[in-house]
Image 1 (cartoon, rainbow, N blue to C red):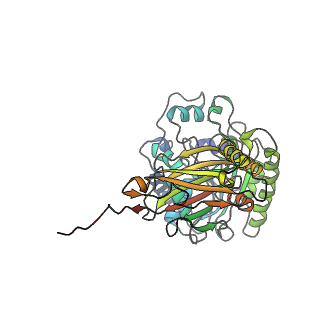
Image 2 (cartoon, one colour):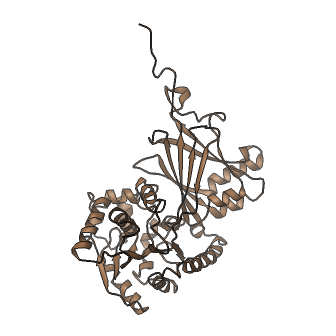
Length: 444
């Protein structure tokens, strides 16, 4: 059984060409389209909670299989978040009905288009075809925004969960995403490192996480690095596909390897999954070597780096600055590296509107490796937060060099932390302190 789940602002009819193309490639399965009510994702009152519960109700009403590993699923864009949220809420890794999950350009860690407003979203997604600007589904777009707390928590519930959701013996998940922007009027949406709607780096589900705790000793923070969860997904960059062409819309797919890759993702078994992952990784390296050697920054390898800053009580730190500087920022070369890092490496910073404790930095890995090319180079990462304790009754001691330490990375650690085509979640915990006058006792 194959189930197809469309994305935001879409409907099930647009996936008929994909079904036809897959059958031409040799796919022979009955197909059920789950469309959770056409255009419901554009209702400003609909939430992900609503979509997930509606999907479960529709699944049971249509008597789709619920036995473990009995269904293969294709999702596009927002559908990736919906299906992940659905099976996390209603099943366990042992009972989930999904065996093979093919994600086409999923917004696993958000889209740079989600926060841009109705006029921009309408023109970018509908081009000249739309008849009017529409309700965009404000709560859905809030979850789709870069660095949203929704996508952060969702990853904590499946990818970073104690139990294994993905890999042999579990869900065999393949993520395929394009790297080319739109053409025509929709090209107004194009941003570096995207397929027009979703970043290559935010499509990849295989995130890593760095937790840094400044509470016990602000000068010597404690680190916890989670780079190799037990889960595994296959990830492929399909050169020259955009957000629509990859799912056979218009004249797509454009890449001759895209349909065969889809078919492989829908037929791979547990025994062959590791080899499938490695084949895609080999193909990715070839694509990125060619693209990183070119001048068009759109195609360079980027990392989506998400910072989430809280205090020891779990309260969000809403006003802070993450600072990057080279080699203590002393000397002409160090100051040049620091300047070039700000101008050429960090190509975009987005503060999540729903909670400014969450922020996304888009890092150009090609430029980063080019700058820090000496064995003795060090990249320093520090943070300054408001309110500052020295000027308030409560706050954080982060302003002076003697107040809080920095994360210091050597070249090997730089390459471990910053890698193209993925997301890194960095959780920083700061010590919130209270001045002597905040509370006091007095004699009668």
